[in-house]
Amino acid sequence: MDLSATSQQWVNVVLLWIGFSVVIGLVARAFLPGDEPKGALGTLVIGVVGSSVGSFFASLFWKMERFNPIGPLGFAVSVLAAMGVLLLFRFLLNVKFEPKSSDRS
Image (cartoon, rainbow, N blue to C red):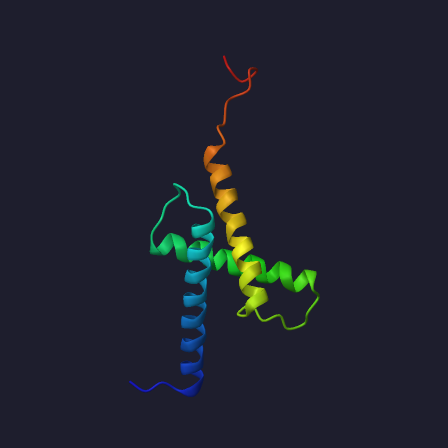
């Protein structure tokens, strides 16, 4: 199966981001082990969200026009963001919603 040069480039970019996101998710889970759902898909989602959020805030903070998220700075920021996502997920799982006393009949 032959793909055009543009298609090959897009496939390479998607596979690179998937691999980078999995590594980010694995590193974040290594720093913050816990009981949240594990598995390949969960790790990928944590890595994708961490990479996206981290890259967004890094580009705003350092005011770079072209911030490369796949680099040492991008890696560090993405891991920190993925760890933040894990902590937020744990916080949301542990919050217990109790009805107010005025809501009880």
